[in-house]
Length: 125
Ligand SMILES: [Ca+2]
Ligand SMILES: [Ca+2]
Image 1 (tube, rainbow, N blue to C red):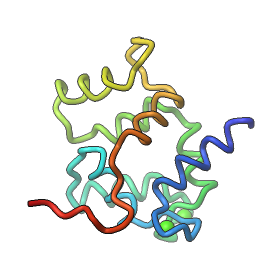
Image 2: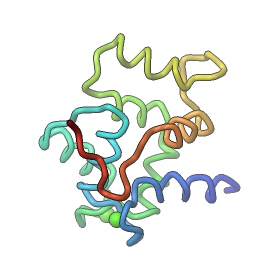
Image 3: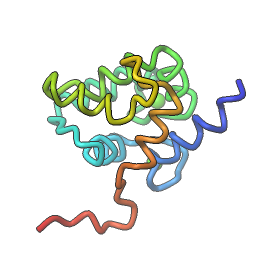
Image 4: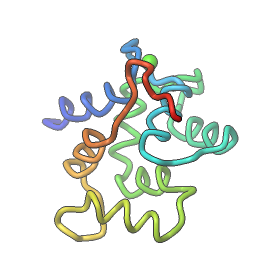
């Protein structure tokens, strides 16, 4: 797959401490940075969905399986708790070809555009 490098870069954005695995905390931080407000319950469900060997962490292989399953699924998961309008707005803002789906390239742009706190300066007033 020529997309592996690209996918690795997305994975690295989730993997804040670069240990090669995405913890539930890292997943929550990314989702938060993207504007999704997940409860612990919901977060656990998403985590379990991706974490196929149930070791509590998402490794790159699990992430890549999850990703290739369908980007629609990814989007549904990420937008699980936002209202329809919010979702449409979020999709529209990154859906550059306007087909209603966020493809890999668009998702990557969205990830790059998101301000993902990496140095612990995510303090809010
Ligand atoms: Ca990690
Ligand atoms: Ca795992």
